[in-house]
Length: 231
Image 1 (cartoon, rainbow, N blue to C red):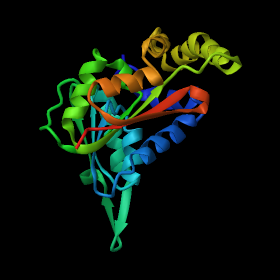
Image 2 (cartoon, helix red, strand yellow):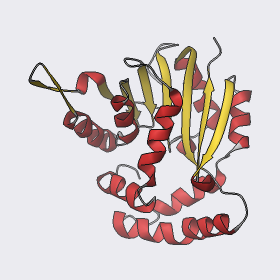
Image 3 (cartoon, rainbow, N blue to C red):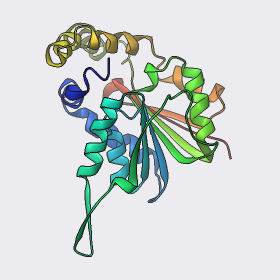
């Protein structure tokens, strides 16, 4: 499904979130407080928007996804980011690379990364528990994970309006622009089924993460969860 909508994926993200997805990604990267030069894994990285934000913060990034077409778009973005040094234009690919990989069986030794980012991808994994375990495995002791994911606002007017949009308007708009029937109905379904807020924080603690924190953004439409692999 993701390969089929890859050419319109970024447009739809920006349109359907009213442009808020950019600020959400920046908040996620800031929450890690990575140091320049840190090696960061962008898991379920898609077209690389979250990786780009991490690169702008000075990180070296490995962008992993299971869709070749999504990664092809990410590679073009990375190549388009340029730095200037000593009057010479230098491409940034050495600071970012793409890798086709299964998020539940990552091809990295234990403790490879200072930090891990997951943006809007964890709910797509076959097993949330296995995904959290694999993330913890590839983190260095003391390393941090940040999970940026859709959530469910609490009951009230905002929550009612959000659910109306998510379940009725968003799928129709997404299908019209992507030209893929059912693709954005899947989004509403997975958001509704995914543990959000305190439930996800509890699962992170149960899978061995320490210092687990979470906070809602934009009235609870999305949430940022952070945790660490114990030192």
